[in-house]
Image 1 (tube, rainbow, N blue to C red):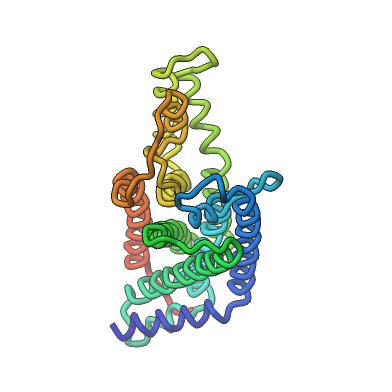
Image 2: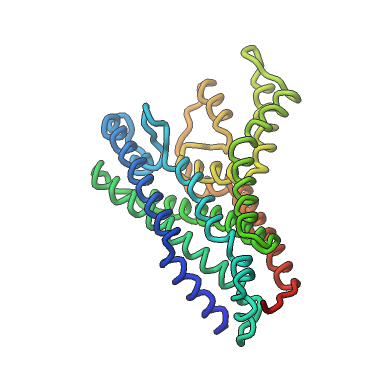
Length: 315
């Protein structure tokens, strides 16, 4: 346990002293302040039209000219932070020769990778908690509406899901750091997968769903539901989709399904959705949360096994 704590505190100190992370943290804070300013301005003009969960709208509303909301901003920056924390976790130590010298000390090999993962997880948690607190404080000052107890609980769940999402990308980048000897290769592999899932997974899901279950303006509700179900199933291969669906349920209590399309069909059919309690929102997104946890566990388990079995020579 002493070896694990030593690695943990060393990595945490290195991260806080790294210019790379200082710059990334500043970018995240600036983007968060910008999104909350836009949201607050729009809420102040329409605050009389809505009386439920006004404070949560700070994290949902986007501007008319700049359609950039807080969840979208988080879904972009969290993978970047996770990749930055893990892409050189092992191969940089191996290349510099520090890994062999480190393992020559009374430190177990698993303490190294576990300590690095825990330190990165704490960094992600600090970032998410601080930016959500900053956004909530600025938003409270701008709109003057305090959050209700359920809104605070939903924000805590939003933080938890965001940390879990960042943990997946960090575990994936750590895996590449173990598999590849060069840090540039592991960084490019991690970024390539993120860009593919972020930019092209939705297009692929749309093409396959359109070919299997085509729809048009004359399509029935059953045909639209079939298309939407297939599209959702394919797009959920991407962890980004799992994350977006989870935080939508947390920040939009009125969302009674993980599919906004089916929600709109219900509204057009004359249904008047009511806000759901928190536990029902959690039931809706429980499969997505389990999927994120499973992906994170699988990536880190493969990295752990590979790291424990590889040969490390002194250089």
